[in-house]
Length: 500
Figure (cartoon, rainbow, N blue to C red):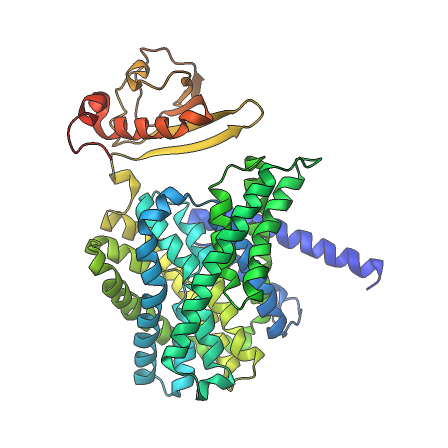
């Protein structure tokens, strides 16, 4: 490649990134994951658009796994362990037992409706059964969904990739003729458990090392943190465990630890995740052949319908009913199982091993993701409201965001007074914040002012509280309690059974 060609490649790449960044705003207004617009950019660059030809399924699989690793590292880093811990058992069951139920039901329906062999039906069912972390994170984190529900769906999307990857790899390999059910289950269990242990071990060692290091530049800390996550990814792969599981867990441990320059690290990891999403979906769009897609549309609708309307609800019902999850929440969780890059990347596995009909499988999965994302994405807010999954309907809802100021050991907490919150009408002095914590600013109707102790909060107010690191948890709990009980929160908290 000469310098002229390099300039063209860099110019096109920069334009693609800029167009993809603009697409995020368009997608958010439409209630869609931005992946659809990224796929559209890829299709526009591909053989039926500008004529760029790319048909290397094996390279796509490798690059796709690396991009997914970055996305999952960011997902783990930005997830609070306090919200994941209560739902971890449910997420684990959904990601294992639920996946196999979903695959079994989808496979049976595909065999019943379509003229395909058992192997192809299992591959279609398995590839399509994995929910996608990138799609789930991008949609749910832009919606006011209750923290417990959001954490459950997000954790499931991070945990359910390894079982599906193993299943697809076995079914498309020579082991199809000799692998037993128990052998596959044992391999999945090993990969999950060891992947989790490797992720925790490497991340904790990394936290210990970073806390005792004095790097010469602050910009090196974000690089070192992401390198630690990828060390877990590589280490897990070397021992035959799940690299995807390891890097997600490593991100979770790192994100919930006290790290130097945490704010800049979070911004860096988020930026890398966005870049990984853009590159991954554009690449998948270029790999697709629009000329073949129309022919695969009926099959995609049948498989997607079987999965979305039957298999997913059945698996959620079977897995969450023992946990006494209300049926309304189960409806929301069923509809929130979004598909995205993971199924499409998995669909390249049959192509890379030369499985008969592999291109057809890829086309079906590609269209399935597009069609049902167009269906589920825009309707998910409506389903959330209809099932009571939105945080706005919960009077405890207080939006909190921290922005640490590491140099002085302080933190700024920002919260919004929701319409149903009982914070409305409470005076600043009645919040009874811990000593040293100060409500410094209020934004009301577009005007910014410094409140007095007698200033009463109103619905829609945006408030800023300054405090030291030690009191962050106490302040968050206090604000949530007042939001629930109002100015009598201290009296209610003293009653038996009211705390916790």
